[in-house]
Image 1 (cartoon, rainbow, N blue to C red):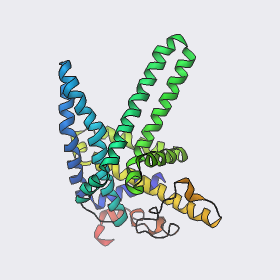
Image 2 (cartoon, one colour):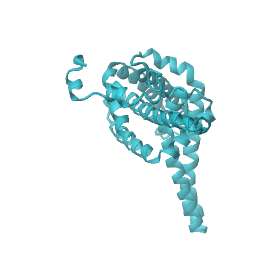
Image 3 (cartoon, rainbow, N blue to C red):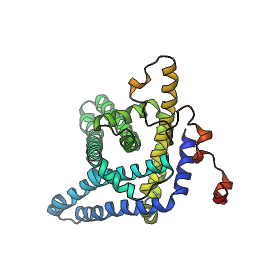
Image 4 (tube, helix red, strand yellow):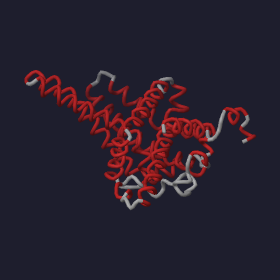
Length: 284
């Protein structure tokens, strides 16, 4: 699945590069202005300025702007994958449709990350001095939970815009997907870490980082979507209750809403191109 995810990511980006760059510029500017101001205030040496301006601006970026803008990107990429067409306007449509639930996602993940990070430090240092085995065990558990939350974060926004479900249902779906596909999600996380490293280069951040990350996440969700659509159809034939698991989703029937068993790799033009198509796209 990871190979198909990377292949789809490449061709979606190749087909819609101009739109994705423009959308990424909007995304990056929305984050960088308050982010830079907030970090400057935090590093000013003035405690009052850091508390009154720096911390609120950084929280605004992490809890609100980042998830809301990224939800807009997720909606835009969904249109690119589903219809093979779309525009930057879909970014703003996505923001309008999902900003409330995206805020909930942002606050949930920031709260979980802060809580678990503090737990890793607290139980290892404070409780570890009193009861070392218990302290390190709890600290290790918190660290694993933190890693699990980071894996959930990769899929949560594509899940949000595809399922259109409430916050708790979206978080539950993301958690179940990670639990059911741990190796795939770890491989996907490695790709995100590589992209995060490249994003430290300013041109990459402004031109590609957000859009490319969302194409990668949405392509991964599409692969999981097709997997569960096929499994669900097979289980229905056997009388199994696949839909009750919450993983079989009506929209997960391929980009053109075909039957899930026919929406496989040989019918997906994003997955059936080679080097010739890269060199001579007009001959496709």
